[in-house]
Image (cartoon, rainbow, N blue to C red; front, side, top):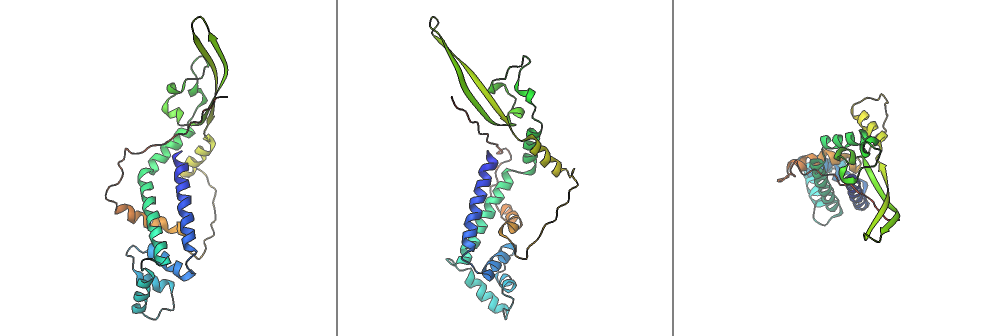
Length: 231
């Protein structure tokens, strides 16, 4: 599904960033993160924040420029982060809050009766309503019997079809959390060092705003994977 593809893409990008970060020492990484978190991209200010013992603004300016030279590990890391932020911005344009909530609602509202006719027979795929079909995560089909009418020259198949319904409880739980229906409180431990994922949201909005051609609103699409096989 689309969410799985995006999650895999983000995971791969984070792996690349982590590998690039390994080439930096602690102060270089702090400089890069301070630089990325600043909308003005002030390299001298970022350098002074990372190197507290820096003697003067002139020194910070010169050293900051040196770290930003093309080909340096710090520059490569920053460029990779900006690329990831730009991708993150595109994801925000394509999959907004309304889209996610609509898809969660479809999963939460799925009803097993939507897949059967009034005689209790399972509906063919093309007759299942789109809203109900969105709640199906997998379909398995297996031919369990074949018969042939030699006189008519017609072969008939008896097919067993199994539908796997998406996690209705999980969807309801996510919707309930969005509506603040639960009273559980969580405590979070915040470390002193800024993590890569923490500043993506801070810089991705700036990158998103600078995009010349955002995707059209009707470009929202959810891909559904249907597995089928013959036994």
